Length: 333
Ligand code: SF4
Figure 1: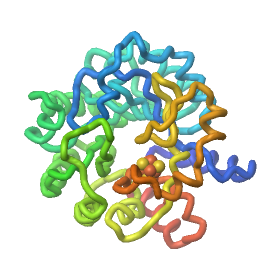
Figure 2 (figure 1 turned 90 degrees about the vertical axis):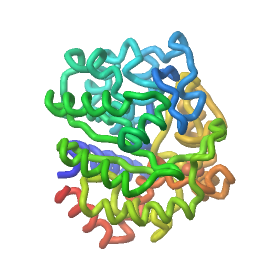
Figure 3 (figure 1 turned 90 degrees about the horizontal axis):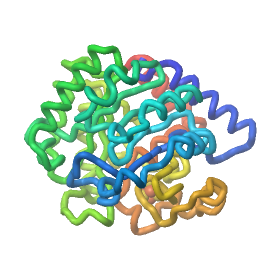
Figure 4 (figure 1 turned 45 degrees about the vertical axis):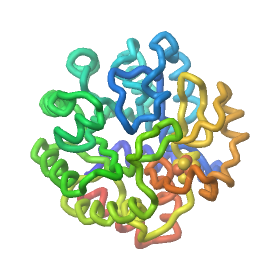
């Protein structure tokens, strides 16, 4: 199977429970950003995400409260760099105790110091390593030499120790798809458990001209769609067809809710129009109809999986053919 079985069953149970309660919108993933401190300053990262002070991090209790409030079956631990978070072990254990699945999103530089030997492999833990290309490209994106080689060393060790390990690649304007294919081939040789490939989002705080227009994304993802037939990508085929401009969806910003050192961030993982410490205020006062419509100028070139993978799932009951394709894709992965 492409995903561990409990991820599929947890998501089905979560959807059924919400359907029975009459909920049309509900979170699938909590993007939990316990800190805005990082040991890198990558060129495509929102500036606020790597310039925060460690002392301003969220306490573990508040992180776990957010896990409970969101009710999402998946928790993506990001930031900042989560391995810099001093209470990482306690936080991971608390999330696993709640039967949620964790994606630990990391640049991998501190895996040997902060994860291996301290946090055991667990079926509810996926290590998700950031890799935006082969050595020269990735080191350029990370603005530091040696990051690629360290990440590869850590991926090999992660696999050797038995962690479920995937990679996460962002496509920018300058990304060569032939290099993405080379990366997929290399990762397949390391027996990686999955690869997530997504288009970059143009954060307002990033001045570099590295982001794509919607047409640029369509062109690049038509090639990624081809590649996806040969490698173990974790993006659904329908999402990749959407990113390639072959189908259209409304956004589902409520599916991926974000809790940060400034509180709940709305309306979505990418746009921080409003921050609040109250889940009720965030959930009930965000204008979901407006943000689903994608009419805001900030949505113009956004085709991010965090907004649209849930739209794929939401549309499945209306497209039985897609439902069958998705099941086959998961089983055969
Ligand atoms: S389209 Fe993108 S930027 Fe707009 S609400 Fe959805 S996820 Fe956010």
